[in-house]
Image 1 (cartoon, rainbow, N blue to C red):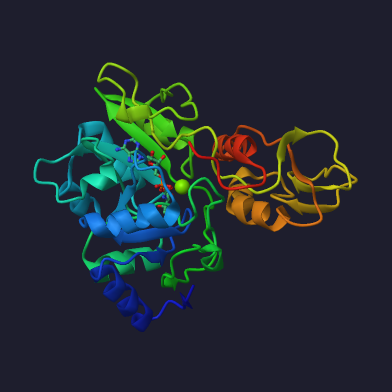
Image 2: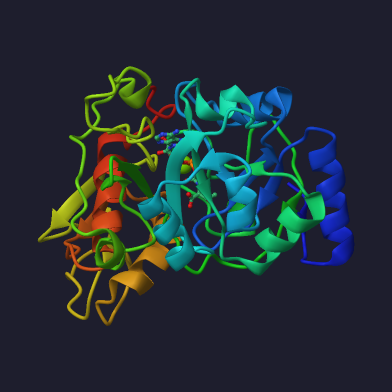
Length: 334
Ligand code: TXA
Ligand code: MG
């Protein structure tokens, strides 16, 4: 993939690609996205195809400002408060599409809602402004596989795209997805904005039951049921080797993803998510360290216990899904 440094000419090249309906690799503070013109069915279809993404799984739309978001969706009072407090930032809000919403229905996977956020990355904001269009961008990884947190992670077997290099992602896990229904906030996906911060504004967050593999989730849910995120497939984010969680011992055949000052002895290789036991630092390293450990000669990846505090909730969520989907062969089909 051509990786371009953050220059004006690189941005112009990316804008030209977007205007032609082609996807572009875009850095955000969470993970790299595969961005495209969210209004174009064809451009969005290319992104689904490049990712091998199940078509019922809707995409997040990125906009430059709250004002731009208000052109697309209807804000209830609590969602508005959350947007004012946390945008730009790693919070995605699911909101009702306006009747005149120009976004492709493919983005919403047929739902009458849209997931939106304003990314807190200067290069993403510059691209949004230069392109002057809403950008649909799922994480720039083949569906079900590890998310990219550096420009050179953006790799697709059947597609060459321009990737803007914004350096390593500061947050390292995807945005937190929240939906407000009748004044009550639901946590659809834990992510880069921690629960406690959102709860200070929204009160206790409700969580829908875990979506099972193969469950179409929100696409099939009735109005009275709790909202779900179709993307919360149980198997996701998977490396090629088996992944073992909450390891208390480790063998020399295994690579160890460690956490904290006391590293388990005996592993064939070790990467420590955070030596000082900080979940924010750990989230920033999560996907790149999993990638680095997913290699010969190791038979498996063992992961030490990660606490639930702070971004630990999102890290544990990703690791649990990775453990279900991990193993040789193609990414698990939901
Ligand atoms: O941090 C992020 O959110 C990254 C960067 C690139 O911004 N993007 C990302 O997008 O993770 P993606 O497409 O991999 O994840 C979108 C999530 C999925 O879990 C999807 O099911 C959910 O958002 N989602 C999208 N639209 C939805 C809707 N209308 N209702 C419920 N959930 C929705
Ligand atoms: Mg993803």
